[in-house]
Image 1 (cartoon, rainbow, N blue to C red):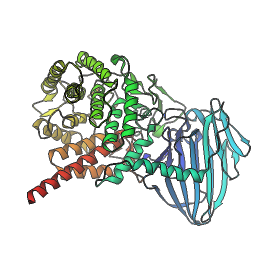
Image 2: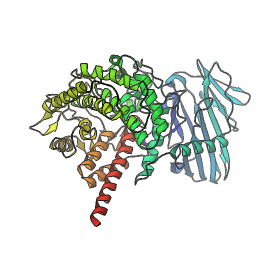
Image 3: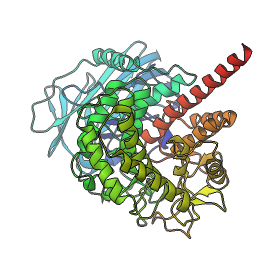
Image 4: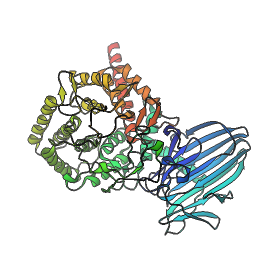
Length: 600
């Protein structure tokens, strides 16, 4: 059984990522890309499906771990009866091939160590042929090959590679695992100690561009580093998470493959990067976005592969037992859904990019005009909505809200940047969508926006109403919606995505999942905009407390089990963390400014 999700940390090379447990075991690594087959898949099965353990041979009395400041270099310190030893894990930013570097460093005493490397290609399905070549350990099967380089003698046992050694104070014992396509020559060796310094320098140099200097800088920087860790550098795409099939409900079926690029995530990530000082990342993300959505707007997908691939067929890897017994899904059938809201999110992101100084004289505007033609013709159509329900299309209010955003940003683009477009037509469209939302999407009796037209269900996505500028935060329809969400969707201080019970078939799945962290961040934003600053800070502090010991968040939180659930680490949780920190910092600064004005 894999560890609790919060017991993992991420290391990455800006093309793929590995999850390292508190026990010194790497249980997940896909190579050469985030969405490639895993060579370590114990996370979704057991140790027979691939893992790499480096830990003290004897009993461990205490474990302490941290990232080196402003980096993705992970340090795990083990305390034993024999002494203390430190494990340093990192992936150098991609050079010739993906490398995982592990350095065992003696701190105090003389500590016996053990290593077990069990390589299994294709998501734990294929056992490789392993042999020695010029002092290197080589594992080969089909298109995959891996090299282990270490000064420590190794031996084979029970279809795995083992080593035993002892470290004393100041000793440094390196291990380097490198993947390479099996038909290519062996990868060039790297110097582990030299790469450690270079990797630290890379991450600290990158973080130095951060412009946020507020109260929560540590949390913001760690979230920005996590987003960078989820970046596929060759294309600029950012995956939603490094994993697949970590459950939204322990023992349930709500578990999906998140190793792809969602347009929705693309847009919010682009804006967070822009407003945090990372113009080059935002520009690269924008280019990926434009390439991905190019073509017929009717064929726009909600998600793509890291290089813009459209075919993301879903299947169940039934040879894996799954995390907590959940089915393991590879690919994501939601890529074929129609989700109207992504048109608004794309239009908003490109508009915010222009406002932030990203070049406006490129083909983007022509593409946006085509997107608006589609929105004009199809905004009345039902869709599967932001939560990718599998219970059939509906007239989701959030989807209509984002169609309004598309029209609003199109109008503003013409007005602010002197671009050409049918402004009068778009103004009329914007007004028409607004009127319909207020007529059909708002329950006057209960004083709240609803999940879809004519429903009694609630949807936390409607917390976006003031955040996108549809209504001011103090409008009674906004305050009423927040109050309804507090009554019906707030559980132990965290927000559920939408109403779930056996009488509704909105999502086509059995009810029950964790509280959704992004929605809870949105609640904090609403409180801040309403002037409920103490409550906003209380919610934000509660969310920050959910981060694991190295500052990472998954998608959801199980309030009963008190555990993180869902794929990990999750971009859709770390982006709103950044945004809410900025919102609260701005609100505090505005309050201080008013106080100073009053003292004059």
